[in-house]
Length: 162
Image (cartoon, rainbow, N blue to C red):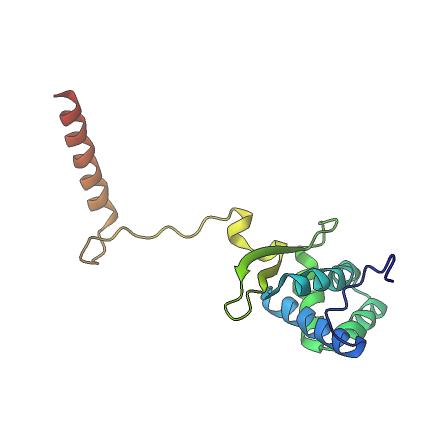
């Protein structure tokens, strides 16, 4: 019986599971977003969020503790330099799971797991405005597009008044 056992073993022995979660956590820190199954993402969230909390305190002890979990120097450096500065004022909830549907081969539930502070589209940051183009693909100048828009508006208003 597994009463009170909240750890998802993911069908793997403990050494394989620890190595897989360490690799996935390193990839998440380096790439900010990875695609995986929902079960692995939920297990990864439990694994990586305490490490992100520990990275807020940049001390030798916390660096060594995080390195013991990750085993990747580049990931530890990026975690303490870049990621920790962005999550410094966040009280928790550093990751987000976005479900994407079933995998093509076996219909396993797939998702993206990402660091919350690194998704600009969710943060509401505007994408750079694109220049208007004609149907032929040539770029119009800003003054030309304004003049064309005003002409279209005036013709629309005159059509409505008739």
